[in-house]
Image 1 (cartoon, rainbow, N blue to C red):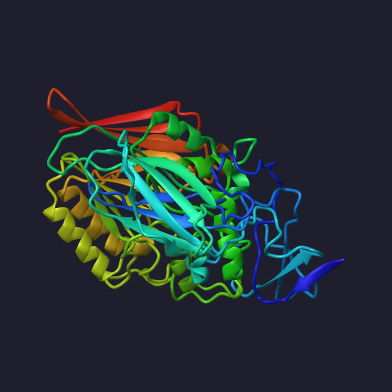
Image 2: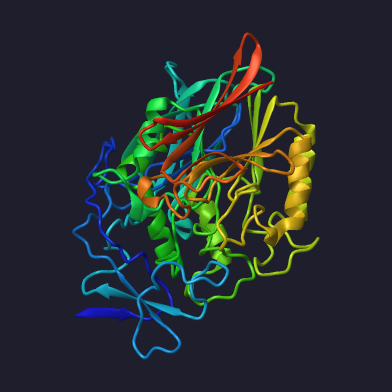
Length: 507
């Protein structure tokens, strides 16, 4: 018999299949494994500059995630016109790209199951955490103070490391313990590199992708092949352009939204990758609230979980600074701009005009001012959504469509005037396109796995395309110098690292 919880809440994808996941692919060193607290969701390194970094930590009650022996919740809906509860609609029942806004969700847990015992659950724990760090090869650790994790923020704490040395490899350790206890309950090791000084030429390699859907993992033990591939490439940093996870079918309350983050980052490949590669996290629609969402959207489809809560959960679950639009310099030749595409946008369905916006006035002013102040050789806008495309006919949510045409024309002109290129996420296929009117170049990372690639028709090559391929993988970018001549090489890769297309820009 199933127990019914009707809290207009919860739900996760009704899985088409469930991957068999080994608990955690990395061992947690511990001096007191019997008591913990543990770190089953690992740690994350972010917001790295030439002298700073943010380390995200979380304490957990158990050393491993709940396995596939546990049941999954069942998610159903009260739907107008139906007497019986309905499953989630197949595919995308679109009203400007969204699910039905008048459906009301409920969640059913198997008897004996709850939010603490479902597949992938990693329950948080009270306790204290600290970070130890040192330049690679150094003898003595630098230490932060012990800090209590915040139970109101999913038992997390973020440490701001300052005074770091530019262009330096750092060893890193996060420790957890019970409050007031001198015994270390868990210890995890990792590493990262700081950015080179802004006045020094340096070889820098980074990677970027979008669309890491939990249902579309592609390793037998759980996780994504691209994480191992990028680790083997030893990239300096990673940019996730958004859709880190897909709330739509399960995040009907805050607890289930947090469950989504815990089960994603306790996967073996994710756990290992994020303690060794700094990541700049961006969000899009699915990891803010739901498909094609905007702040004023009215919908019951997500139950008790609100757009504003989605904004806060993102900042809670990632190493993050304020505001979420920001820029980072990596040596003399490379600067990236990461923009916020959800928090300030007008409704997709509004008519286009001078006040319709994705970025908002304040972000747009910041972007133009910081770009004009930059002397980096290569300046890259990284956007959750595209500026060039071309896009599919049912999309109305980006600067690549006429839905936001007025703002798009202004920004494309500015980008070309300042000799910038665009890297975009969101779209589930890889492409390199050149805008027919302005010449703006755009590189789409594509989805993280082959199973998640789609939407575009393979073989549909448009005049804008230099390359188009419906395949999973990632984009890598290498800034380098040859005989003191700066170059930027952008490569589209398959999930195994195979180079599928290469474009080289020289200054």
